Image: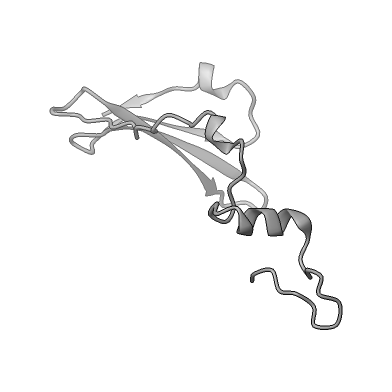
Amino acid sequence: MGSQALPHTGRNSSASRICFRTGSGQSKGTSAGSSHQLAHPAYAKPELLATGPRQLWNWDITKLLGAIEWTYFYLYVILDVFSRYVVGWKVAKGGERGAGETAYWGYA
């Protein structure tokens, strides 16, 4: 899309800013002041590496449906990343507040 003259008037059909940008030799989408903007530093993706058991753990929470209608439980699991074994677990009734502090944790 360049600046084209209208046949009957001899005037430009595009806006003056577009004519300036395309006529000045700059690439599309750049402006005169863009070189002074700060660039974000390169993002380094974090890498968690376990070379043996008991170095790095992960956790998961799963909502389980109960036998009675509208009842549910939460299964909390702590996993060893290297060996993929369950380190700890807990089942808590859904809707309880403070269950994490007082509930029994099972350890494998």
